[in-house]
Length: 170
Image (cartoon, rainbow, N blue to C red; front, top):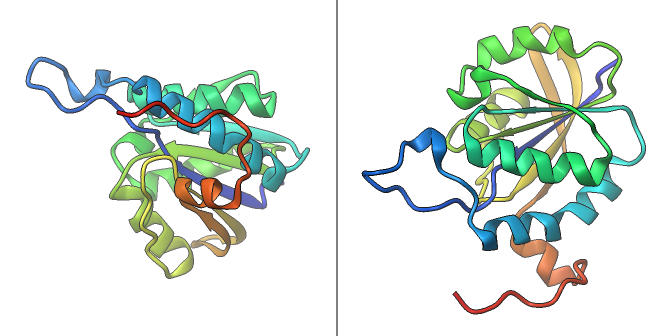
């Protein structure tokens, strides 16, 4: 049964441009690299439990979810539209579809993730690109949980948890 929810904000994406639809904005090379660097600590936090990954259908979120899926050994990513548009009531209704998974990783966007954290645990969190928070679920009706941990991507660098070479200058 689902007992943990992990909310992840997508990595750094290409800038908004009048010629590019928001839905099609991809991760930058630097954004993809930073997400790959953030994955090892997330893998340790999640452990070897039964995991499913849901993603906003927006390209940058799907790409972030794919990086996480590769590292976690998850074969399928489910695109869930209510993550893309921040529809919390619909998201909580969708939780019943989780089935036998123990951990749900949901990849989405700001400001929705901050608001969802507030609704879930009473605390809005400042999700920077690539940030993640883990919640222990207490109830489904209403959906409530306790914050277990929160990581900004810069925290990983401060702890020296990544072994990748430094990023090239922007």
